[in-house]
Length: 122
Image (spheres, rainbow, N blue to C red):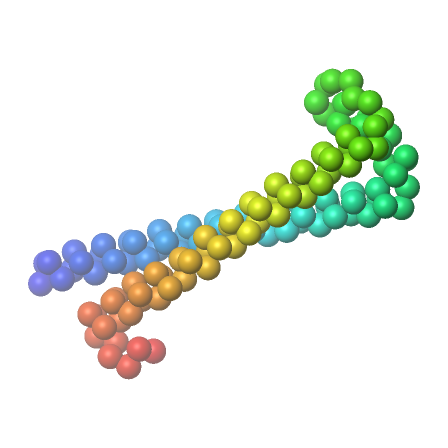
């Protein structure tokens, strides 16, 4: 009986840790979606007024990075597109990580349910 209790406790702890990892992944996914929307808004700003957006973004990047940047439209545009790519890649990595954890989590649920009395699966 002690072995069964240890098995149950181990499965339960592992279930809680896996669920916590998924929740953290979902929080990161939500933050990345907000960053993605901000970068898309910056791209729209570039489409509306490329010269003004290049000047504004160069000034902002110069202030944040404490370096002197030119108002080159191409350079600023490259930074924005690279930012979009980086945030998108990280977003999809996070989504795929969370989605891959769900079948594993369901497997743990089935083991706990079948081994410990819930025969109807509900």
